[in-house]
Image (cartoon, rainbow, N blue to C red; front, side, top):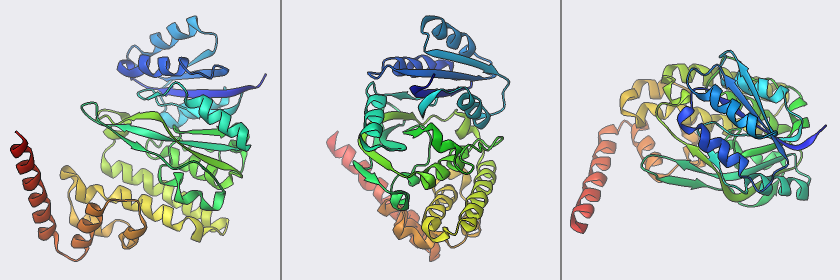
Length: 325
């Protein structure tokens, strides 16, 4: 029998965070859902924790499987769903108690097949940054201006039937990052009626030892390049290259940015050679002025001036702190 919402949580060795994640889902003000916990061969206490929760709440279904990666875990979880709508929560994240009530009520109100909410990105020392998109109904052609810049599963509620449209259910097994972009791109494109909700309802934890962050940059680039080629092929076959060109260029820019913003990966030659030319559209990308200025200086062989500006900013910031002390 179909129920309103199925929530899928792929799990691998996140024992430290799993209680907080599951508790936040069970505390939802919207209660008519099923929770599918997919243990992807965890070697810590996650299997036991999942089983303990399932023994106390009939809405919870646990699937234990051999480790195959997050994409395979998502696919396994999806195949077990009965919900009209599908939601995803990463096992080291947590959600606000009204998240699914807000998403589902908006889906019903607007007859939407895809609902997106704002989110918090939790960094170090309890600090967080909020990202919201504005409350409005968005037709598919304009969706690229909004949530395509954050193509993750976890801040979205999608109609189950949408996954069966033209390859949307084709989870890229074997890719850790960006396996979500591969599927959500198709969901966005085939969505007939989407809505963005201003509320920030999801807490995404940025931690250094997560599976995604443990993947080295070269491996990430290989995964991204595979996905980019798939998306470009999809766009070519459907004659929609112009519609999504900017989105793909931005994602290429975002991954190559590590070569000039992260100390351990710093390499000007690789920055210039990887996806050459995408930075020419930086003025259309959602990046801050500092990044734009730094990229401009590097592209014009003025790297030393860029570093000098950064050092001056840090010096002035330190002086302001010392004066306050």
